[in-house]
Length: 365
Image 1 (cartoon, one colour):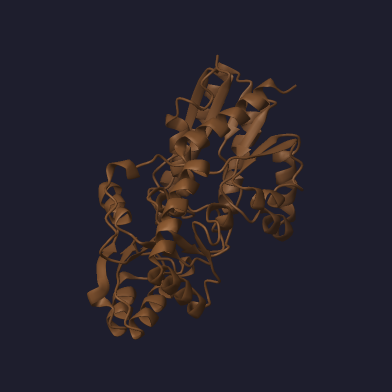
Image 2 (cartoon, one colour):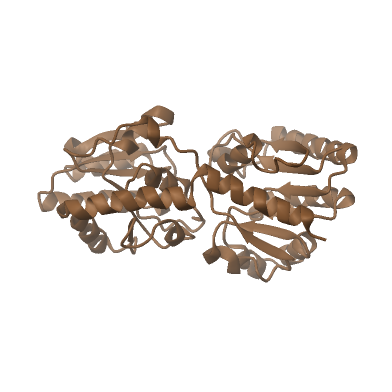
């Protein structure tokens, strides 16, 4: 018998929500006063595999349903924690899991890592009905107050806010930013993530003879490595480039520890609560980014960085120049970035808040 069953999608593939689910699965603090069982799912091999049909996936999904049914039958939990995928075709797969859960359990808490549910309801009458069946009189966890209105009309008994948090890796690296101004981009090379706007910003800095280097950290998405490199060469930026391509673990953290600025001009429609910003802030790197999703809840404009219009390159350049030319502002923002991480997005903050939510639900009538 178990008090709680956790349904979690874990890597692979590696992206924000699966990484947070992995943290929950490995946490000793989340639900520590209750007996727990974990149902871990991994269907796609990598990010490119998401949403693609294959016989292998069908077999895995059926096996997952069987495994979930057996665990619920054997443990009869008081609560199910479900890190759900509420959008696209993935929701229909999860809806079958929800129906299985509802056979055994009356209390479900859904943890959401996306935005755009209002649009899903507006675009699909069927989905609006399935959402009501799934969420009415249940509990929800959302990432920020600014995203809460996405869920308020879906019939939840109560909504909780738990911002994402990451382990602090920065303590293992020396701050090495005194002699060079390093501008970093970290994300898959997706056009809407602002990778081309990043390059255009660098080009304008070059025309005014600013001295800097840059890192483009990521893998090919809908923008190819060839297109990016050709653009960098055409604009005469190749001599400024320090790193291009993927970086993981120690290599990635070393690049962040040497960064003066994290520039992420995203206008990605599904942008929600980017973990890359938390990684930058933990290293005390000021962030320039957009108001997409919950970014303005992560980055405080004028304190830990700047919120900009990602399509207004001139405005982005002005913010970069402001930081470049004012060493005191650089230092203040570095301090505020680090403080912001510690106060809002540390792993301890995340696990403590999530555990408090679980206790609150378990003790509710």
